[in-house]
Length: 335
Picture 1 (cartoon, rainbow, N blue to C red):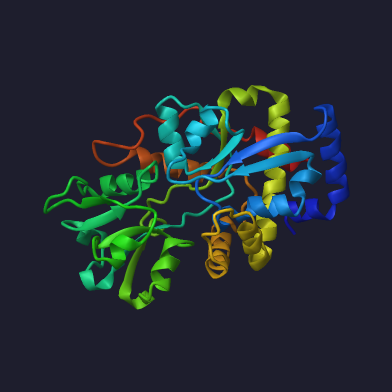
Picture 2 (cartoon, rainbow, N blue to C red):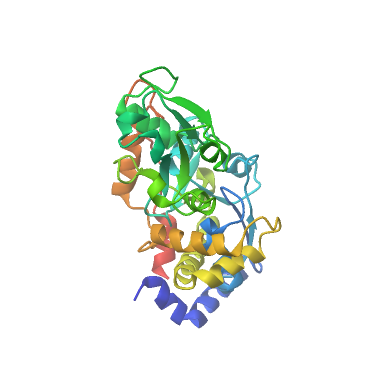
């Protein structure tokens, strides 16, 4: 039985503790969460916590702000538009090195879902076969794991016979379907399913999971501004937020279809489909399985070393200092 199941069984105590803490702040405490991307089951745990009243039990009034191609979570956080954001660790650490004082306070995702997906007809069977090929890559901070991987392989990313031609990939799978790229970036829980939905079968594809290549970096974590952690009231608010969020993630994994419907209920665009969101929720649950929200320092160090290593143009140039803290998860687990 997990820590968060125990919390769920003692909801009355959690409600009392949350209400008492909220009362000390003059009522329900507002928290705004900025997502890394649009409303989808990648963030199902937060929507499950919202719809099931887990945040309310903790004395929190939570607003979830969707992201999108024109929204940079770090900029929203820096501009005061959110209290906490979801981001991948490579982009967060790169932003920190560039002067944005963001700090990881919790890590719900403990495994990576990132892949390169190639058409088998290209003849690509190993990473060495990437040379001379065109690869679709997401940008806006999502390119860092790819660039780090190529650095480790010693494959230039500026084209040529010995390098790869990088196609700035939109957040879709069109370059593969239209044969504009030999391989494209996909997530196990999203774009890979879109490729299958387009009628390409699994045996017509070759996939390279970053996890399997030894260059996986931590993905969806929770980040806040460093200065805010000096305020005990903010730390308390974040501890309650993380505690409720992890209850949400556990519930979503146990009820994927219901969690997917909660996501759809919050999708104002109407762009998502029920079948794809259920697929996504089941796949995301594999990436959060076993997580308590506490950052694994070994996984953090592997991420840092991956980003530092390989080639003359690493993602980050120095070991980060103060880029994570356990103070929030310690407080979340203590109550």
